[in-house]
Length: 306
Image (tube, rainbow, N blue to C red; front, side, top):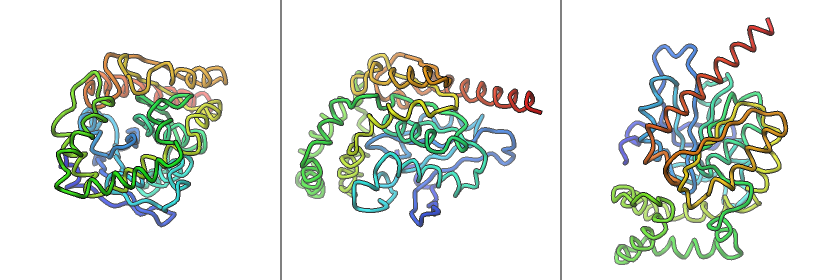
């Protein structure tokens, strides 16, 4: 699970912040789409390990740890630094740091889908298309309602202190397995992934506070209100058995995009919330088809305009 980190780089953003990134670019990448992949909450660039080799043959790929997660430091201590708008700003800044000046594709999973959507609404000229996988919905799901309760950040800090004690490792492991069971359902929790998450939280317990802070400021309500501003092609992919963020919560955003004259497709496939881990092959086919269709449409529009 950690081998991608052996080849990561630290990108310096225009704001002075930094993010950890794994980049795979073809030697002659002319004409290939540029894709930036955004993980969920919690998560890291390692979440894309299954999907990466399936997409790298057709696109230039960058995976980043969003600030406050993985190995990327937070930009600031306050919750405002973890808002959708700030994370969207850092996402576009990461593309700039890579030298990607043309419109890019954003592929986001779960909360990363919300960040991708916010970036498309704020920076329409920079985003060529979206793929939103198990994305946040128009109303907050149960775990986000709990994380946004008053005092949740204090609880997260206390739990984070627990993760630092090796003597409490069996208890921490049991707690984490229970949480991850809900996220992985209906699939089992992989021992390798459980071990990685336990090690990550033990070394950086502040990630737990980031988990709380991204839920503040009513992000799901923001996504609902900003959906009408999206003009790039959008593909929603949701798991039929997704118990964490059921498809019915994301579908209203798809419908808002369509009602505003945008272009959006909604695909439901077998699986739960972690499609990027358990249904990578099927998911990759949908992503690649979306990239190609979007690129062909863009080329056709350019030719008509000439």
